[in-house]
Length: 102
Image (cartoon, rainbow, N blue to C red):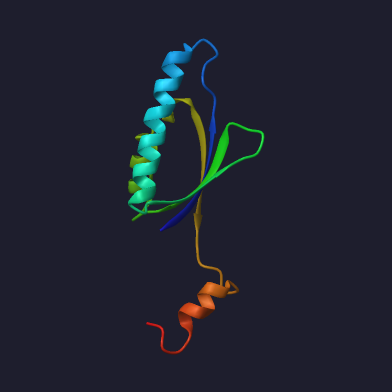
């Protein structure tokens, strides 16, 4: 299943900079691991905000929840999840249905 996920991060102002730096480094390693294995298909920053839009390609709700809950920044995030379905006007969808394509 494909999901569009918006993540807004709000670190406490009282968090020591060294803790924030270490937390962000762990987050980066985890996010890149998920990107490499294909489950975190897209990652885009929201201009001017500490937020991102991401596309996840996972088996379902439970796997997505597990991945999101595993994010080191998870306790400091507001997350919005939108399940996505194929759109019939999408060019790639037409190519997928073209004769000779499985």
